[in-house]
Amino acid sequence: MTQDKQNQAIAIVTGANRGIGLEVVRQLAHRGMTVILGARDLEKGKAAAVALTNESLTVIPRQLDVSEPESIDRLVTQIEAEFGYLDILVNNAGILYDTWQQANTADLDTVRQALETNTFGPWRMCQAFIPLLRRSQGGRIVNVSSEGGSLASMSGGTPAYSVSKVALNALTRMLAAELKETGILVNSVCPGWVATDMGGAGGRPVEQGASGVIWAATLPKNGPTGGFFRDGKPLPW
Image (cartoon, rainbow, N blue to C red; front, top):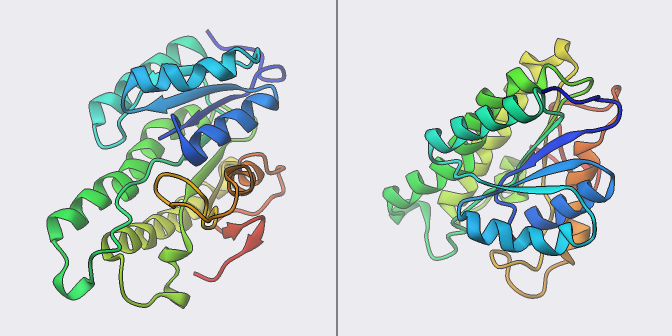
């Protein structure tokens, strides 16, 4: 059943049981939103949600593997039945920062694996949830990307990860143009080098990395679309 949109914003964050994704869930929930915490392993998702629900935040863990269409379809059905609309989609799930590879010798099966989650996953999520985002008073799609996907600064190394993020940025541009008349804003965000399981030690605090994602997820109606940002500032493509 559709809820009163003035009182309840609904958000989905993929890959959200740890790291940047979990912090994005936390910050959105602190803004009074109902946040769906998507996790491949539902038990890990439930465990991650406990501390947030103990703070009286509205966080709902759901099983979600963006590389499996059936998992996405199941979540669409759940959101349709429970809420009837969606306000924010944060495509955060990402894998394979392949520092051990070079493009000229890369294992293409590894590249395909990265593309499946980092590019096709967000693409599937967008296709599946755009109909529900159209029912929002101001839908927002945030694709969590990386400066590693910037052609302007690209060199060698991390071919699977970098190519998957270049493609994700291209998807952002296309969707933003196609959805311009709907009021749905679509942007890519680089959170920077963040101290997470993927980023390793020494990076910026996860709260700081997540803040740029929150900025894009909560843009006003006249906010930018089709852009690539870090900390709310444009990055070169």
